[in-house]
Length: 272
Image (cartoon, rainbow, N blue to C red):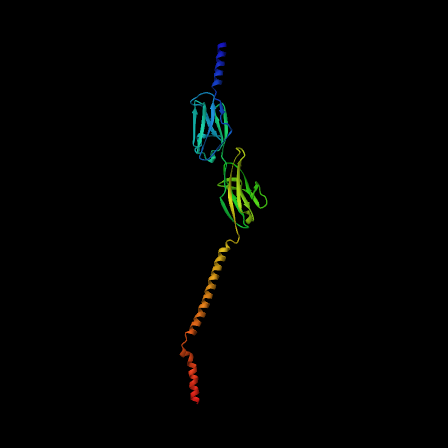
C-alpha cells in the first residue's frame, strides 16, 4: 500500500513538472508597430519541447485561420520560447493576441502607430466656409489647432465634427470654419494622440484666402483692354481723317484756285 501511494505521488509530481506554463516575455503589455515593418510576440514555456502545444489567437480567432496575416510561428528550443512574427502588417493586424496551451494563457495588445494626414494646401474664397478632413491610421484622439487655438469641440466660427472615411467613422475628424476672413490665412494642424500607447502624430495644412472679387479681376482687365484699344483706334482714325483733309487742300493746283477770278475779268470786259 505504501508503495502504491508513493508511486501515485511521484506520478502527480511528475505531471506538475511537465505542465507547460506560459510567461509573456515582452517588456510591455502593449506593442506598437509601424507600416512596412514587423512585430514579434514571444511566449516562454517551462520545458524544452520541440513541439509545444501552443496556439496563437487574435481577438478570439486562431491566427492560422486569418489569411490576411503573413505569420510565422516557430519554437526556439534554446530559449524555450514560442514566437509569432507578423511581417509588413496592415492596420487590421492590430488587436489582442493570446498564446494558449491547454493549461494556461497570456496575452498582449498590438496597436498600430498613429498616423494623421490633411491636405498640404487648401484655397478658400473670402466669406465662404473652410472645411478640412483629417485622415487617420490607428486609433488616435483628434484635436485641431487653428489661429494658435486648440479645438476639441465646436466653438464660435469653428465646428469640430465626425465624418466617415471609406466606411470608417473618424471622431472629430472634420474641421469647419465659417465666414473665412483674410486674417485666417495660415496653417491648420490636425493632432492625433493614442492615449493608450502615448504615441502621437500631426499634420499641417496651409490655408490661402482669396479675395471674393478675385474672379472678376480678369474680366475687368479684359474689358479695360478692349476699351483702351477702341479709344486708340478712334483717336487714330480722327487724326488720320484730319490729316487727309489738310493734304487734300494743300494738293489743289494754282489754275483751279484762280478759275473764279478769270470769270470776273471776262464779265468786266463784256460790260465795257
